[in-house]
Length: 122
Length: 278
Ligand code: HEM
Ligand code: HEM
Image 1: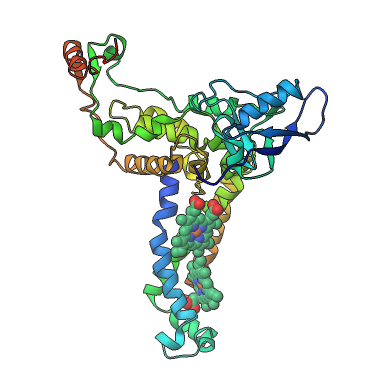
Image 2: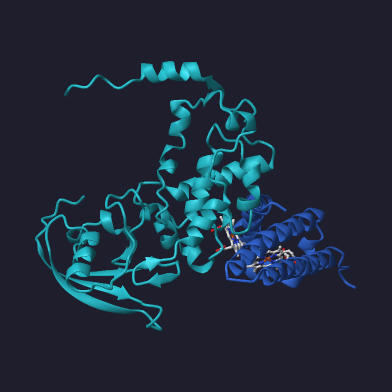
């Protein structure tokens, strides 16, 4: 894969992160301003489950998860691969980063899905 | 240059010494010397060698900022010794060390091989699809003044390697192509007579290529010829991104060939004015 494509994606996901992380901050830190509820209330389990029922939220959170993970993992790969590594170690770092990213993505998606499909009251 | 009053005076030179046959680690030797107005660091080194330390080693040639041989770390900044006047450093102690980010061969001599290897890797020459015209030219490839101006500053590189010595990425990632090679990759790729981008991809579109530039801009500050390699790297990124999504500059109508007869006519038109002194 051309490095240009990998790097372009690292930059292209930034608008997604900026908008969705902004919205995420609005929910988590500015709930009194946007939703008229306290920050504590906004972070309560029951409120979270209630929010999680929305299909829009499900899609947007998975999108933020993918965008943030790709941006972050590409960035971390860059930091590690700047160290003097043998070609084998460099390959290992690439494979390790991909595996770790996919694992976190699967876990995050599972959690988001779990919230979405959680049956209130059992 | 600053117009501060420059008083000729005694200056202490702290010169880093290293002889791989004798020393395990480098050390600094000090030489005190009277410095006159206009004296360059290179002249001071010559005087030290002539009068105090005949074994002192460094590399230099043209004495006028053209050959790019005398790059050194002068008062902790990469500079050409021949272009740096001692009194302009505004310091009574001048520390001279070999360029960082290169292996130290001896005293002030760096091993510039990585610079040359990286430069060669990006194919620093015009690549043209019409190889017949290259091998048996029927004329000259046309380049307008505007086309030339768009790459002009990048053609001034003298391969002195100061930019690599200044680059913080090269310091941690020796495989990073670095500002010199990447700026030259842009210089040739952007040349209207060149259509070699795809031939260079294998060398430049890699992890250790332009995306490892984190915009410190130290290369542009260090360049003694006023080249802005950091800017060239950003332009190279744009070229690569546009090419990767199919919006690269189409160069099929590349550089028209001007027949030799017309070249001769053009040269006559632009002939210099007649001599005023016999
Ligand atoms: C809207 C918010 C963000 C913006 C505008 C942004 C912008 C950038 C840019 C431009 C770079 C490239 C820097 C370079 O190549 O020198 C970068 C690198 C990086 N980003 Fe972000 N980023 C954002 C959010 C995040 C988040 C949320 C994370 C963590 C998940 C993250 C992790 C990283 C990492 C690890 C690097 C590599 C750093 C390096 O190479 O030194 N960024 N970011
Ligand atoms: C102190 C700051 C933060 C708090 C309190 C917080 C809290 C939460 C909570 C409670 C959820 C569950 C969903 C919900 O109730 O809406 C969540 C999900 C999520 N957050 Fe954050 N968050 C914070 C910062 C961030 C940052 C900086 C990022 C991105 C770089 C991020 C990315 C995500 C993603 C992708 C999800 C959904 C994926 C999943 O559930 O695995 N969060 N966060």
